[in-house]
Amino acid sequence: MQTTTELPAKLSSARAGGSLRRLRGPGRPRRRRPTGALAGWLSVAPALLVILGFTFYPMVQAMLLSTDRWNMLGPKEFVGTENYETILAAGTFRESLFNTLVFTLITLAGTYALALATAMAANREMASARLVRTLTVLPAVIPMVVAGLIWKWLYEPDHGLVNSLIGLVGVDGARWLFDNDLALPAVALVSIWKDFGIYALILLGGLQRIPAELYEAATIDRAGPWQQFRSVTLPMLRPASAAVFLLLLFNSFKVFDQVWVMTEGGPGTATLTVVTFIYTRLLTDVGVASAASVVLFVILLTITMIRLRLTSRRDS
Amino acid sequence: MKRSARSLPRVLWLVLISVFAGLPVLWMVLTSLQPMEELLGTDASLIPSSVSLNAYEEVLSRFPFWQWFFNSVLVAGAVVAGNLVFDTLAAYGLSRIKFRGRQVVLTLILATLMIPTQVILVPLYLVMRDLGWIDTYWALIIPFLASPTGIFLLRQHFVTLPIQLDEAAAIDGAGRIRTLLTVLLPNSWAALGTVAVLKFMWTWGEFAWPSLVTNDELLRTLPVGLARFQNQFNPRWDLLMAGSVMAAIPVVLCFVLLQRFFVRGLTNGAVKE
Image 1 (cartoon, chains in turn green, blue):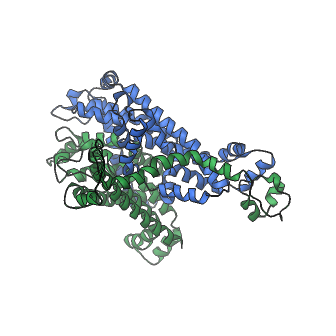
Image 2 (cartoon, one colour):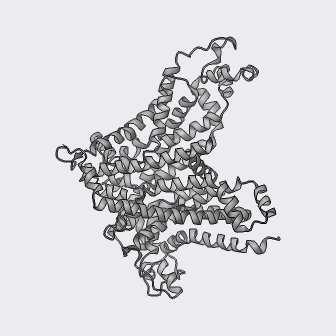
Image 3 (cartoon, chains in turn green, yellow):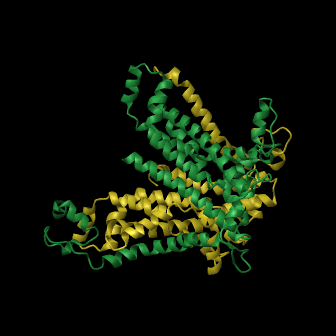
């Protein structure tokens, strides 16, 4: 132990993974351990094979297939950019893209507002924070399909809890999932319900990193609660908020499970999302489904790039 | 408490939000315990007047529920085990062994981090078809045995462990495998737990992929089985909720037992990923 701790840091890090038995003196030029390459490749090989074969290769295939017309049975026919032109011209894909955007906006605003309010309330009430944390995170644990089924039952027009509760106040209920205008927000509410607890935790972590002195200084400057919130809390919370926004964006664009279980994209195309669109074309219109996948990938890639941009700006 | 008056709205909000989060779950449980006639009664009673386990018995007798349960356990178990072994090995190699091409491998894995399964549904299905794996467990397990997320999380953790630990082990004559097993892993329970819990929950809840690659009723995982039995027996909410409760119990248990890992894993992933 003694000798190792006395090693110069640079040397020991250069020998990461190397055996010390060959080390004869700290001044000796470093030599690559002969089995290093083999051991290195052996260690990453299983994971690498899985990832290359079942994620990377399919990704490349998706791009190639997006230029073909194919129903999975007959021969493939190269059609160039035709699939992209088809889906990007008017039609169901554009609707699904629009629906996904609306869904994302509702989810983003709703989740952030609920999560922030919850995080701020739990931040001061530390005693209750534990219970609240457990209760609000519980929905996140439940499989999305189960969440979708629960809410489908809650939304039942005649016997569901939502309409019963609304009825108590004397208001007539709605046919939530069967109504063209209400179905998409109703499905978005399931996502808000399921995940706001997780995002509240992330924001709570951010809140707890704000130094108390800032609030003391603000109080001395006679800033009211609203001013403190605007000039201390929100700016200091920006990194956590950015993380929350980007995660929400990323996940909202992939929404599928609850849509499929609750409405299968209907009524009509009212809740058809991008992944739901892909799913319905998957086995019959491979090229179109692939083109839609590539478009989705480009959107997610753009979001990732924005995320990286924000992170690096924060670091510098 | 000077603050008590001012914090009353806060407490009210916390109660309200807890009800919002908890009520649907409570409702699922209550519905599963009520007979169907009562659920569809004209005065939708908020509290069940009688409790019965009939719905559970019916789910278990009418559907191959235990088979689905077994499938879910098998698939999630295999995926978690695979990730713990493969991701750990890869993370070890990428953090502890210097070799030509390491940077390339690392970049490649980071690049795959942002490819979601939804985007590769089509071609991955074709790969499974060409391999003859449609309607087999292989399609549910093999593609997910390793994950960039797991490798990333574990590597992040290994990098924080001092290299001197390895060197001390090497002086004692330990090879790489023994160093990994006896030095690194005992210091990594939190990270390994995070990966295990996250993988378990994600795999358990997976829906789109298993319903695409399995047609055989006996190969369905729980979410797929549940979703499909709602189409056949649309109005049987008691059965659906009973099945939902049973599908949710393992993950909820897992969450309650390993809450700390789960919460840390999610927040870590959020900030770093």
